[in-house]
Amino acid sequence: YYNFNHRLVKKYAFSYDELDRFFLTKVSTVNENDTEESAYEFEYNTASFPPRMAHNFQFDAWGYHNLNSVGHPIPNVGFGNPLSSYADRSPDLASTLGGSLSKIIYPTKGYSKFHYELNRATQYLNLDKTKPASNIIGGLRVTKIEDYDRIHTKPYNVTKLVYSDGSISYQPIFVQNF
Image (tube, rainbow, N blue to C red; front, top):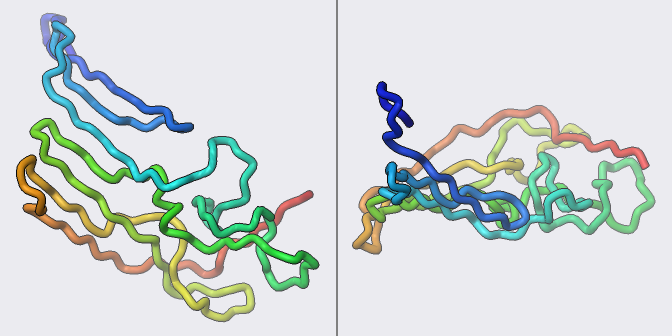
């Protein structure tokens, strides 16, 4: 950015890794001599997720990646589909985590770690108007943030986040034309 005399005071540099998708890995403050003064670094969960733009049917009912599907796009919706196997649209935490932020490293070299869980919903009904065995739905929410200094291996601060469950009426229904 520039001061009132239009003199460059500070620049910011953005660094990315491309692991089939772009991930912001670092934001650096750079002085007028192009010397890095400080940096924030970012790490991500490396759980597998499909290649970008891949024709892949491994996703849950909310569009998040899962490893449950059998490679067929049609879930079993109880209409007597003559398929030998159906797509499993249930959420899967391990694969939903793929690409989510796991750690921020601060200029002081202290850092924060992020822990997640799948979203939950109450008053959730199946197509036959029965309650499902699980109220877990797609997507992630942060459950815990652990803050560390650069010296110690135990966190000096732990923030636990508690949420009330969301509310939806029915599971999403997929219709696909072939």
